[in-house]
Length: 188
Image 1 (tube, rainbow, N blue to C red):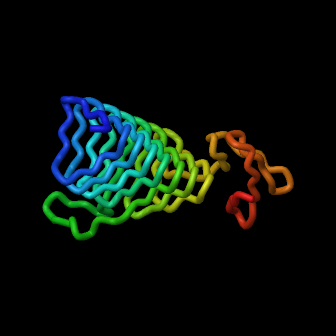
Image 2 (cartoon, rainbow, N blue to C red):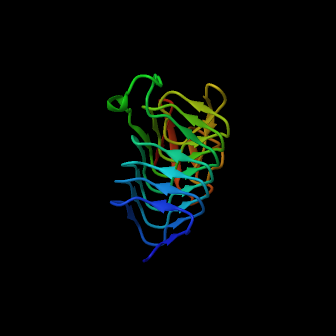
């Protein structure tokens, strides 16, 4: 075995777990889920069924990622992040055929206790503040806070707030250049 699974966790059949991934205490990975390489799952996480987690993702304690949610690579999910998969759930109506897709693009981070309502896309390297409520798509590199969330700026790959001079900013992480055009950030 080229990954670590704590003895208190339960892994269903037909699950793929990439090398060097770690699944800690009291987790359950459901049938059909795919976990990439070098991922880490804190205690008490539930994944799936049929969830795809890309390489190098870090999921903190008490996160449930339901069917319909997909994480690309290098996604960070803080403690107790909440996802939904049906827009208007009722206990007495089965709506499994109405699951909406939620896509978390490469490198995005979601802070502790944030809630992500189903059917949205969170852009590359976007940063969702702790406790935020996301109900709509989030642009790449956007910094979002509040309930409901609103954009208060832009962040670079390192998670630092971008400062634009003449519509250009430099990434604190790797020195990349960005341009702000039509209220969107693009890497030069």
